[in-house]
Image 1 (tube, rainbow, N blue to C red):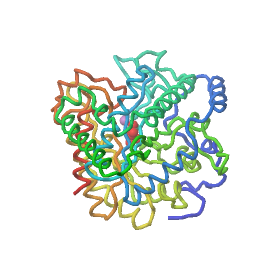
Image 2 (image 1 turned 120 degrees about the vertical axis):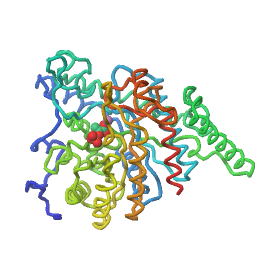
Image 3 (image 1 turned 90 degrees about the horizontal axis):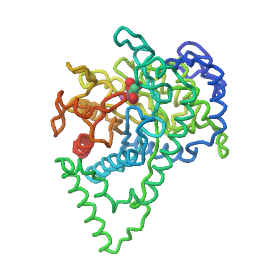
Image 4 (image 1 turned 180 degrees about the vertical axis):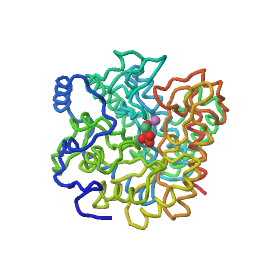
Length: 457
Ligand code: PEP
Ligand code: CO
């Protein structure tokens, strides 16, 4: 391990600036067909207001530091990929409802403060394992998220269009605006806990279990009032809700990176937290270079091939000053592998004294394709990965700080299993995701209840 300012490739790590990533290989970038249009779009984006403020990112980092120290738990959840097509107030509200429900279950049942972060208001770009897709002998560029192209299979819709970056910005702005209104304007008030239980969820066993939690919260609030304790505290009536997405398309992220007038430091103002994906975490790559210089709290996905040496290098490069809350390592190993591959990483990071926050993404290592050709995940594999993740932390004496999950507020059938026993055949009923399969409302609640049990062990 070296703290000298050179990286694994021997290149100097000096003079960071928002465009210094351009000197490095950038994986997973779209092939923009029209450079002049891209340049124009970059200029437009650079002139638009920031979506979040540096002070908010610092506030989130302080909360993540609490989680890193074992005093809070992080719930990071939302779509695999947001869509330009189903943007509506109902859609945003329903996603928020499920996240609030999960957070209430965790906080009430396990008694841990829960930091809430959405994969929302910017999650528009997808890394792909193959840059092209072949259907009936026709080969076209892969779908890379609505920030880049469209999912339908035609030459036109798969062409990368830089104008989409501006549209992603505006959709993020209106999504964020509504989230702020909901979370600060009364909708997230704890007196509304029953309202968050949508009908199709309330009818499920998990929904009924949630109703009992909600009744418990009502009683607790009444009890406090009866004891003369004030229930005016803003914490009971508003929530802090943060946004995050994978910082994948670097032309977009660079254009939204601004110098904070208070501290003089650089923040990527496209979201509060940004993460590096499994396919773009190369130590000598453009994404690591870009992310090391912005001061937002960062995440980095770690798949089953990550070695302890590589992870320690990532910690050194991304968090050289060892600031608690700055770096979240998101383990996504798969239920079968996590018990073998995670413990050496936990031990290495612990022994090196890096104050990282650990999260478990139990989704991306457990994806498979059914005989009918649907990409899915089994609820029990998701739970098994979480279970093994907790066991590994218990053995290492480290805190299993949070989870990172793909969920939706819609009544979909995309992941199999769960209390409703969704089968392979059921996937044909309401399979709506543009990218990876998401847990539906009852499955998300069931996960939260089981997690709460594990956290109270
Ligand atoms: C994702 O989180 O949507 C994703 C693509 O994950 P990963 O980088 O871990 O594969
Ligand atoms: Co995904």
